[in-house]
Amino acid sequence: MADEALFQFLHNELIQYVYKSSEQGEMENARCITKLENMGFRVGQGLIERFTKDTARFKDELDVMKFICKDFWTSVFKKQIDNLRTNHQGIYVLQDNKFRLLSQLSAGKQYLEHAPKYLAFTCGLVRGGLANLGVKSIVTAEVSVMPACKFQVMIQKV
Amino acid sequence: MADEALFQFLHNELIQYVYKSSEQGEMENARCITKLENMGFRVGQGLIERFTKDTARFKDELDVMKFICKDFWTSVFKKQIDNLRTNHQGIYVLQDNKFRLLSQLSAGKQYLEHAPKYLAFTCGLVRGGLANLGVKSIVTAEVSVMPACKFQVMIQKV
Image 1 (cartoon, each protein chain N blue to C red):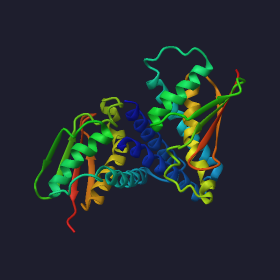
Image 2 (image 1 turned 90 degrees about the vertical axis):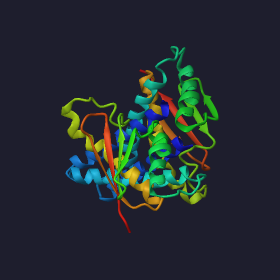
Image 3 (image 1 turned 180 degrees about the horizontal axis):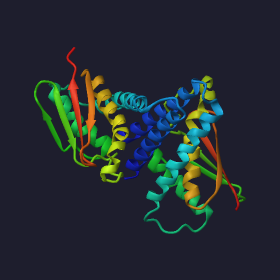
């Protein structure tokens, strides 16, 4: 519980800080999102190296995705992804019904517009984790009712 | 182990980001340190509220400091402070012989000059935690041989 809080508070500070630099006219919203996504990417790269140090080699792409949904997600967010779907053509949808970084926000509709900044870091986290497992991807996120959240992973075939 | 890594990586990103904004001529070193210290302050404030939710009331200042050295430090850094000293006049020195945020850096003398940026957040963390327990303080840090580190807490009498 304490660890969760540490990550959450630090994550909030990060968002605030990135957006504050932006207020000084330096960056607009899209660039802030990109910055956060990039930070997530590098953290994801680092984490996955630690997490997979002692795991067996992955069978295939789906096996990698399952690892992200279970082990990776549990380490970072203290719960698993609730639902994983795929079209078997390189698109995966990871649904988290109570996404931790949104669960502190009011679920009211009026805060929906603020959701993207709370998701950017995590999109990067997933992309970075996958990248270091040799899976190139584009990760986007979508919220319709907080704190539920869907991450869409589009695998980029090389 | 995974949780540790998450905090550590995120903390590194934070430092990098703050210093990168500075490269753009926006801030010099001292301001970066202050920014990091302030972020630590707010995170410390938040954390201590969670941590002390179910603890008994503290007897005195020393009791508060012991809590910081044991429970608080363990939650954040996965180990206790190794040595706590005081002059009984409002100055406390907390020594960590293997400070986690420095332990990934090379212990060589040439990196000593980079130590302050890895300590600023933690100084703020302690100051914020104490502040929310009603103890106003100034916290500074000092490294002579990495990864050992001393935090000096000067209580500000109101």
